[in-house]
Length: 198
Image (cartoon, rainbow, N blue to C red; front, side):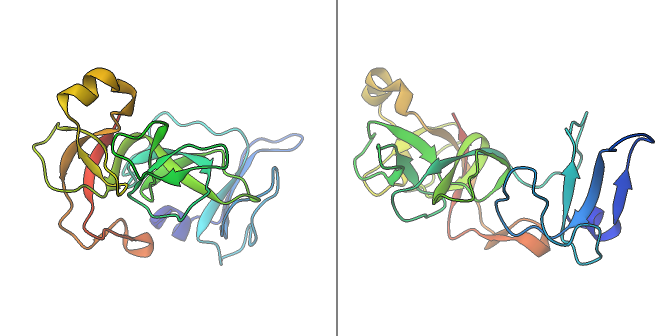
């Protein structure tokens, strides 16, 4: 959480009963329901633990770019590649404009849904902008589907006509920096491009 979590130790609301609270804490991965992470209310925390229903009118200076939905993974996890769904879980696409394609594995999400502590999962971007492997640069707004290597590629007119559900994203631009994100939690770009999820 950057500067906020570096400065804040604890905030507690209310005067009676069990008050909701926001505390500094260590966060190392998925947690069981209603189980706080380690280091709550200590000065060793690198994140925040909210023990309440949480809402915000506006959040300013957010760095991360998309919303991800975690899906069962039955293959290698490579951020920026496209995955298709199977009964065993998500697998890297291996056929152009693949039936059952579900989206792009994201490591730039600001929020994720459905994470389980007991399953191997892939965060699939479902809204926003993600860093993805694209076979080449395209004009901004170019519609994209997957190719046989799991990368994104320009979608043909016939593919858009016959398989509109397989349009995954539109092209934005190539990311020229080697890393993206705040200094303490950067991700390696690895030659990926920015795309807008559809």
